[in-house]
Image (cartoon, rainbow, N blue to C red):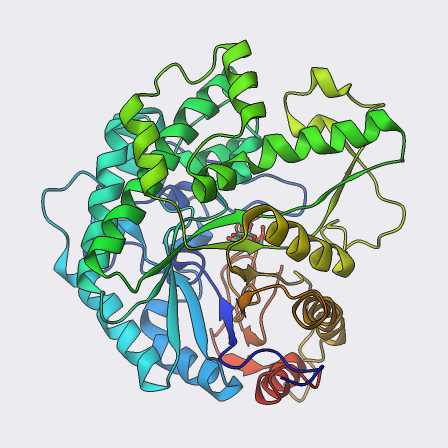
Length: 479
Ligand code: BG6
């Protein structure tokens, strides 16, 4: 490895999630997922979570970019860029349409068989998230999502079904996407997508509800990891967190303590999944507040037995916190602590841009966990313009990715970080999770579709497509 190159076998690729690109929401026996009851929002306008699918409302995930019928064409484009891997998720509702069905849906299983075969045709390794914001809606309505211990078994059954079926086609797995998002326990979207909890205006005790539901979720994850390793000992099964480093607004000790506290409240999920036990500070907090009343000795054993093999994480931004907003000992909702970081520019959607924070995160996670890392999301949501000749010039996206990759390279080459791969988010334009927009684009491949759902669905290569192709070809030595 020269000083400019990534390690041999480094997994270059791209990332998506089933509900954000597949469409075909009711095709092939698929059931309704939580993503199917979310309307389109806008920049700063939250998506509405409706009670079931209401005719006449705009649900952007129903059709998305119709990857369901275009996947061969799209994977050929990924292969043209030189992808070594492709991260997507399995829509839980294609396999178990209601979540509590006795038998899996063969048509759904077959769809992913074909999809994975198509990837392998080009030497592309699938990297699979089991649950990426797409829990069966029936489990939410009927059981209250992960607030109900029974949902652990439904998830494990789904996981085991996938592990057995694809044991020779998929090696890299993750259990829950960004499991730590729910640390923002007053946020309707994040609570619903993570744990299937519906809050609404009058909801009370959100923090207590989150700690109990998240406990069942980490137990479900550990059971799945344990079963997965029995099914194929070569499986690499990871956690997946939204890693956002927390900076103190100033060197004032109260700010520094608050930054540590916010980090503890956000990142205990992966602590449990890597260490097999809750960190002391969270145990103490939970006990003091009387949260998570239902934890058994057996749960604690399962957590120890089902630790993950690697830490997959998304990285988009860092956050800064100020004790002027909330004193460290009064912290509950981490959002209350946030303040602006004057040193960083922001994206058009107000996400701070911080490449150095990625090197910092890679080092920090390495020191904390001592397991390999995998950057499974990173990218810039931006508006793209199609020129008269059909070309799309996106230097802002290239700049964003290049500046982040420069920092990643330093972490790997200079700091010795053990990094498995890099899969930038939304390698093909898709529906934004947070806003439901198409116009918030991340892709190397443009998809002709707008926020109202109009367009030809035609795919075209942006400038960044050729840039990323070169990055992969040179194994990251030419950024
Ligand atoms: C991550 C999610 O939080 O960020 C993705 O795992 C999501 O599903 C991505 O799409 C970007 O967020 P957004 O809201 O811009 O789509």
